[in-house]
Length: 86
Image (cartoon, rainbow, N blue to C red):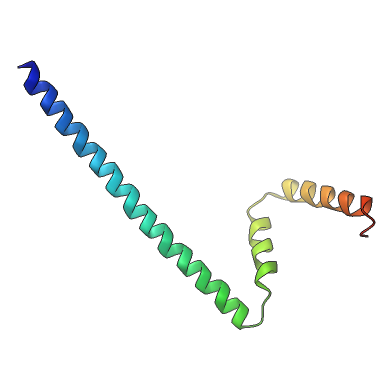
């Protein structure tokens, strides 16, 4: 009886593990597809004459809130001033 319970538990656990792994694999494939789509958009922007490095910077900055952006810019300005770059 105890062996049957253990075997059933192992079967259930194996099924759950398989489901989790399959979900992760599906999401990884979706992530790859999205990443490829993003690369295509950057290539399109470059083909139209836009600076992709500047676009990437703007995308990164837009993810931050205003206070975080201002703090980063202040530190950058301070470092540039210290190095005589302004």
